[in-house]
Image (cartoon, rainbow, N blue to C red; front, side, top):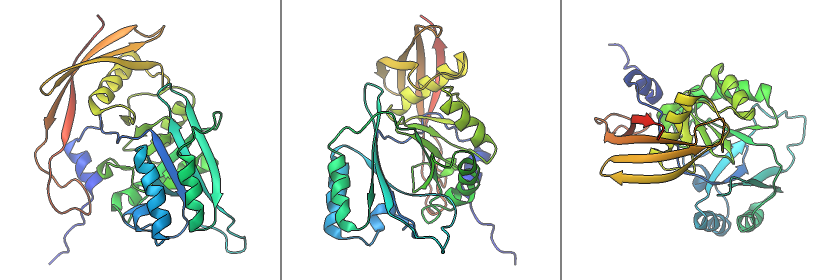
Amino acid sequence: MTAERRFFCADAAEARGDPLLGTAPYGVVWVLLEYRGGWPADGFDGLGLDPGAKALLYSAAQAVRARILLVRRHGRERPDRPAGPRRWAVLRHDRSGAHRQRWGTWYGDEDLARIAGALERPGELGHPPVVLVCTHGRHDACCAVRGRPVVRALSERWPDLVWECTHVGGDRFAANVVVAPDGTSYGRLDARSCLAVVDAHLAGRIGPDHLRGYTDLPPPHQAAVTAVLRRFGPAGRHDYAVTATTRVGDHWRVRVTGSPPRPAAVDVEVRAHRTPAHRLTCNGPAKSTAVVYEVVSLGVP
């Protein structure tokens, strides 16, 4: 008897042709906590830290809908060098489009209170972006199998910008990369495509290929903006904005506006529907459906 072939959700999703369109998870505030040990399957929640300190940070993050991610630099630390303090950051994408960051170091559980306090302050402008690559293998095998080659390639190119991180959502779209705090989510990257995608992003040319969406937008809006990028070409993170939406049932009409030389306005019709039930994660044996967003039409009024 031959052993049953191991299931990988990202392989299955690619074979089915699951679309990336409109799949970016919500997020405008990100808390990064450097943790070099093994990551529990549930990330920050599973760390053996002081319960009171954890609850304080969790409550502060929940108040502003922040996501707490464990992070670490790629590669093993050298045993002949002291580890040094661990870093933390609060990254924020303001409604105005400003990207603010606040960084610090932490040594023990009592320092989590300072991170909680940082969530109440806006942060500073002028920091370079942070490139987060999900490699959270204990959460889902595909995140590690597909994420590690990507974080290795990106770290060799941009060692100061790139961090491994815990679960960011969408295991079946691994390898997943989030550029923060602007909140651009990419999926199905590999060691080659990730370099072109991140290089273009840093140069202000976000394209539709591998784009899951912008994390400050709801899925229909993500789908509409991606459709505009596909029709009119790559653009900067804030070169387009969603300015009006009407919904009837499972249909949305989304107006996307731009500035010259881009179209002043584009109307995009988006339809949502549910897929048949499939196994969507490596660790979840139960089948479930997913909502898919389809662009029905796009036109310049």
